[in-house]
Amino acid sequence: MKLSWKLWLPQKHKHLLLKFAVAVLLMGLAFRLLLVRSTDISPELEIPLPETPRLPQKIEALEPPPSLEVEAQENEEEISETDLFQIDGDKCNLFNGDWVPNPSGPLYTNKTCSFIESHQNCIRNGRPDSDYLYWRWKPRQCDLPKFDAERFLELMRNKAWALIGDSISRNHVQSLLCMLSTVEKPVEVFHDKEYKSRRWNFPTYNLTISVIWSPFLVKATIYEDYNGVSTSEVKLHLDKLDKKWTTLYENLDYMIISTGKWFLKSSIYYENNEVVGCHYCPKRKFEELGFGFAYRKALREAMNFVAKSNHKGMILFRTSTPDHFENGEWSSGGTCKRKFPAKEGDFRLKDIHRILRKIELEEFRDATANASTDGVKMKLLDVNPLSLLRPDGHPGPYREYHPFERHKDGNVQNDCLHWCLPGPIDSWNDLIMEMVVNS
Image (cartoon, rainbow, N blue to C red):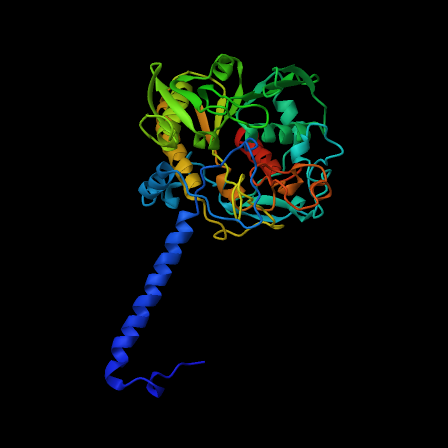
């Protein structure tokens, strides 16, 4: 219905009231945008389980720590999506593409692979839909062949691989083992006390694949139990690399190094064994430096170590992956109910992910400039863009066995960060095959 101002408004006041109405509308729109922006960032973005999951029926926005809000605002204009691709100069950008139907489905199932951890075994845990299994990543400028497990094993005879990082690296190594075990099942030859760092061997090929637990890449003292319950801030030594991976470095032929959201945890930062500041430590009298400060320092330390190492193998740096929590976060009732891949533009990286990504790409560029002159092979495994388009690939509530039977009230913890197995993360191995073997 079109409103007629002449029915009730004297002509001489018409323009004045019209201007006033427009001003009110603009103020309302500005307030709405401000409110949406303020709820983008949550201080409780945890990779392990939260200390006390809060699942209120009515989701309320959490106030972010001041450091996160300020850091996001400061980086808003600096982060440009135009600089995110073609980092290594490849003719075909493997990371610019779309998810297309794949009627043949995954190479393995949860019944044929014994390496899937319970939290990622979505089918066993009762996830009712299966459409998320029938998609593959297709770059727009070239073809991406499917992972060839037999050819990979043959070409990797007598080689040593390691995936170094956090629980996403562990998620990835399970996917890789599942795909390779369609040819030969590996034998576990090592694990640490908590089964976070592990190593497997494929006897016929003498190929070893390890996952090395190093969520910060630098030396860290973490006060958490298995369920992620913290008793104190993380102590991070930003100028000392974690020996769990550096002592093995020279004996590895191929590595996939990554880190990410663990830097959002409350932390105290050290350099030269002295406190230089912290991130989100309101009870301490330390300077608030923000997670970006530590992330850049740690990545620079790790990448400079690699670039100057004269290592003759190949090092892949994997970018961090976004989560797909909606209507909350991990600890505030966030869910991920989507059942199909998204199209480009449907999802926008949250401010936190954009900050992490910007730092990753800048530090990678700087490191590769030095690495190339010394003959060190470094490549960017940029899984961020394709992962952003798979909000359907997470366990969600099916991180545990038939969750709605156990929790009759429907208050179920959702995992919108890790990936179902089989699932979208399997396509990362297609990329590895192309970058390492086919090229």
